[in-house]
Length: 103
Image (cartoon, rainbow, N blue to C red; front, top):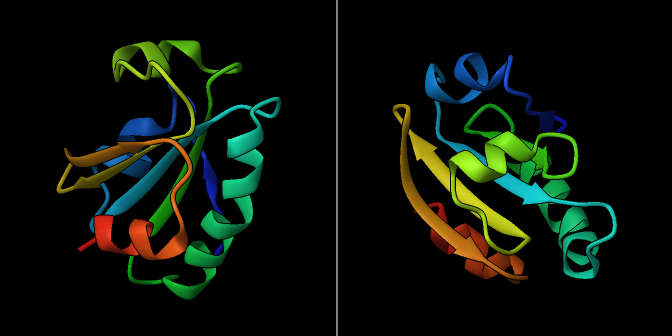
């Protein structure tokens, strides 16, 4: 399953009302560490399809969401479960660290 592009309009349906955990990647196209993380996020989306959702927020296109969640640096990863923010991490992370964040 491909990553979902989040917007203010679809955030509630895709994240808050999700029946599965959701990994959200706050990123921007000009961010070097974000570009390094992108293929890792895509891999996780494919490997965990059906078990969880993987979504992305382009902070340039949806700055209000970055502000709402106090994203001060990118990439920032957040894990939501049952509509609640459970974990967050900033900066590039290897795949193993991201999978640990999901536990």
